[in-house]
Image (cartoon, rainbow, N blue to C red):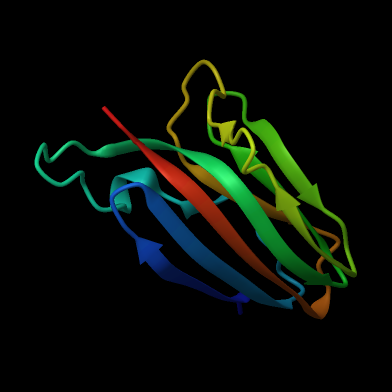
Length: 134
């Protein structure tokens, strides 16, 4: 059996993407699972340019019983944030945004890894992002 996970795209517009992720664990957990795949986001109107990366503006989250590590995907993944267990908060980077400049092998994608997941542990994460093209 596997964790019960969902991904919901709340908005995928020209400049902004907002996505919600949930996990109800069965004790399996997640390891470096692609949650934001930039190639799945809508292309730019007019030019048809593909989204190549995102700049994170906010991360809203609630965790119960486990923590969540959020990484920028690259040859050597780069830590974006660790969401502590049994906690809720909003990480607000909107004054400057956190670009995905993970270095060698960067894909633009965002990955989740759960830490300490046990049966019935859960998380809910909403990420607001600015889309980058070309």
